[in-house]
Length: 284
View 1 (cartoon, one colour):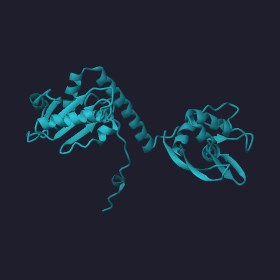
View 2 (tube, helix red, strand yellow):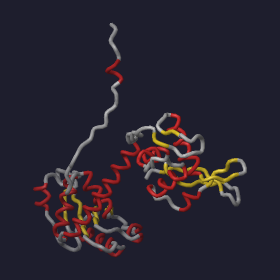
View 3 (cartoon, rainbow, N blue to C red):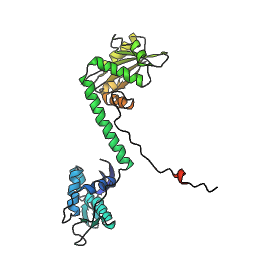
């Protein structure tokens, strides 16, 4: 859910402070989805429905705004109340009993089209779900499968030339090295790879061991990839003289999505806008 910081008041101290609350766009999207009884709905009833739908915390529900000497619910009056006032003015709601009485639908409230922010939020949620599914699939396969997957990904990212070239380079399996791949298509330099399909986080001893394995190969560049995460000590480990890139499970899954490894495109949507240049009439 998209939120924004809003200024509210503490009734006890009258001090102002900021709190995260749903944006107006979110409320506008949810109001058409409310249950509207035939005898109407009050702002309070609408607010209660929205609090449930949006899963607001107690702090968000109880945030206050000051009107004169009164302290009123900020979400209730400032957000929901103002939106109902807009719909009443536009004729989408009516108050047969007059001001302060329940609101009744005067027709269907058409759902608002999603904004750019909504589309981006939905897209990111889909990516997160796909990333979770990818990690589950990886962990369900063997370590050897994972090592091949890592080589596939690095080739897609531009390392090692073709997949056949990468396979020719192969995995050394020697002294803590799981794979070796060309850094460029001409093979002017190589990168050593360590791939750990682990549940536990990788610690500094593993990074130190990898640095030692690099030294044994006369190399100074390596990529350490794991399906889990790295401890703070591992991230802070100073492998002097070595360039070691750490890729945890979350980043691994995102890289797989970005480079189309283990995923396929289901649908593609194009977002259009009016081409203003087309409508410029040539009067010459």
